[in-house]
Image (cartoon, rainbow over all chains, first blue to last red; front, side):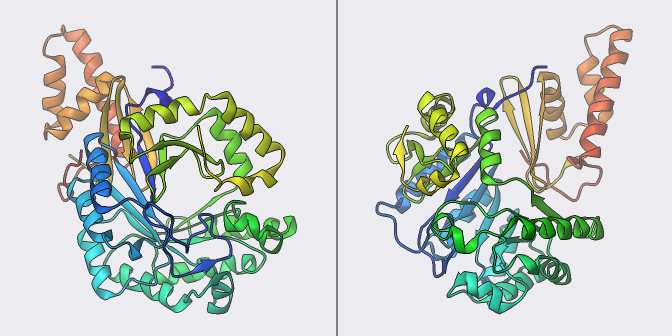
Length: 313
Length: 92
């Protein structure tokens, strides 16, 4: 059997859906630059038209992020719909709106997981990076979810401010009973690109970070998943130029991005069906304009700052 | 035998895609694999799957098919796609 590529698939296997842009925080490293409202976000009718197509195309896995997804007025209705149709749901959240009642509901809906951003082993570190954030609420959300039997994951983004706390954070994650902790190099996109000089850790910091991670991977082997992606966004882009993912990145307004680090929009779910968007996505990866721009980004990573200045392809 | 809770299977022209969404691992299989997955999804036992697939073949060919089915099912089990117990519902 010949190797299968994304072009052989009738539909994406995964949808990463930024459901809203509203957020209660203003994180210095937010790759979506969330916190402000994007004009023309999908309304309820458009949202359910999109969901219906996800079901019809048998897309098995949807990751919902934001903004802060729990601020979306129809968040649970959407999750109920996906759950009813046996689609795996992962939710990426700051955790601050998860109380006992919501944790119970999440457990009933059998989410694949809830991923909570915890950017420090201490409140002061976490809150220095996640402006207006509340570390205690995020940790409390982990506890509530775990108590209800929800697969709970922690995501940590390393910066100059917090990179030294990774070992301590992994130990904390284990003591909380999380399913896994995920990290990797900070991505130079969105607000992180704007704040790059104050955020980007040094090579020496990264060296020590990855050494700690390797030690912790061994230490927690079989007890808790400690996963890190060792490549930066440029390495990822080089790889994706050769092997595009079988996934779509859907923005709050229904526009579909080719990939996070590039500014290209390959479809609009307000005007096109999901199948049409998928075909556009496949074509876009072979578009010379996309390849040329991606190669310029690879040569000059400062161009990553343009990732949220969308352009049609 | 049942599929693990977060395993999703999608039929494709070339066969099928098995997506273990908890571990985020993807496996692909050809049309024969797809046929086996369909039978598993209908609740067939190993013996019934083998009987179903070898029905129209001579004994020596049937033996080859039987070995392939056993190998395929063992691979599914090794990757926690398929479980022996009946506590989890089949998902597709």
